[in-house]
Amino acid sequence: MAAALPYVAVGLGVKQAIDQNAAGKYNQSIQNRNAALADQEAQQIEKQTEFDLQRFDQKIQQLEGQTITRIAKTGASLDQGTGLRVLRRNAEEAEVEKNVINYNSKVAQAQKREAGNMFRIQGQFARQAGRSAAIGTLVSTGLTFAGSSAGKSLLGGSKPAGSFDGASSMTQYQSNPTGYSGSF
Image (cartoon, rainbow, N blue to C red; front, side):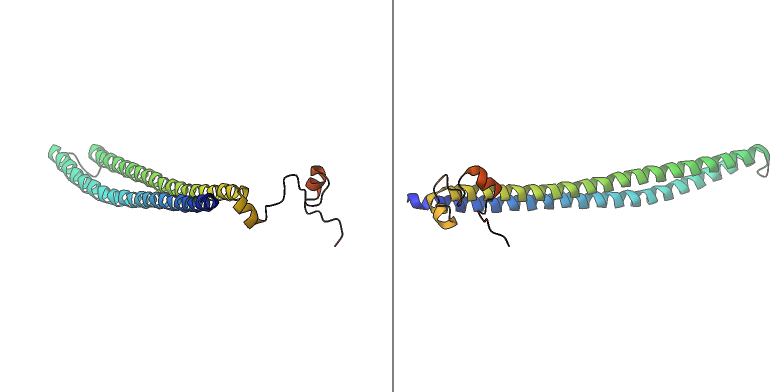
């Protein structure tokens, strides 16, 4: 039974790595969904702006009609003077207000699109974090397995401690880990 423990540990490590990778994929899919929703919200803002501008134009036309009626009741001329100035000022203010509505819409759309981009980045980060965790688990499981007697025999790690592959010291081994002294 004790001989099987390293294999069980490796199996559990592999299972944990698979789960970590799957969690990374799942978190990425959630962030991608959030990004898609942000993109949809940007489109909805654009459509809402079109609708708001149409209603604004209707209200301006209604206001213009009321203004013309009031000016006509006073007996003032619409071709010159005060009546003409009032109509021109109303038209200028309406144009400024439409520009403000468009500007605010563009800003809100840009914010939603940027939020979508951030969600995508977070999704990529979550995916990479899952991969890194899985790799870390596999490496640590492999090191644990390599440290066991079963792992040493399977991985060729059965050399005694202090063996430097033919080198006479650790310093010589570090400078030439292959131990090869010939030339090519």
